[in-house]
Amino acid sequence: MPSNQSAAFAEHVWEIASRRGNNAPRIADDMMEQAFPGTCVQAREEGALRMLRTGIITEVKRILRNQDDGLGQADFSEISETFAPLVRALRSKTYFVESAQEYVGLPELIAEPDLLDDARRFMRRKGIECLAEADRLDALFAAVTADPATTPSIALVSSADIGAR
Image 1 (tube, rainbow, N blue to C red):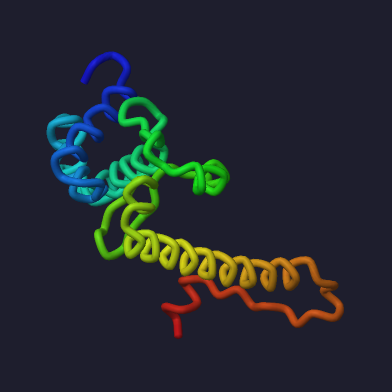
Image 2: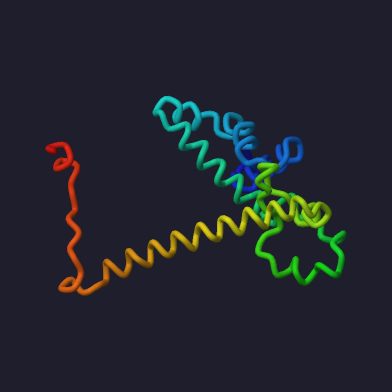
């Protein structure tokens, strides 16, 4: 890879995406060995190849989500002025479409309402999952910061205690 690793990596992601689609795991699998041969050999020897792949997939997803990172900038000239204010308010230029298992650009989502519906449903479901997790964190925070005199103590059990039982 050239001296600017990040830009070269993004360029390689977009090159593969143009042939294979915006499927992050597929892109990562196509490029891992080529982009990081020594790292892959070392990770395989140390049993960490799956973790390396997970990290690369995460970075590929970030690049696909943020098309203005370098190459592959989205062309919004074809988007109707009717939708322009709504598009400008969005935080991303691509969204994950679960049925396609890839990130799809806004112009294509607008052109294909079924994909847009899939993307919005996926985003909404993820939002609900985040809110539910935030509720659980709120409950934990309340328990942690509550008055110890009025809150029942939680006994912490060590792994040694579990093995002794």
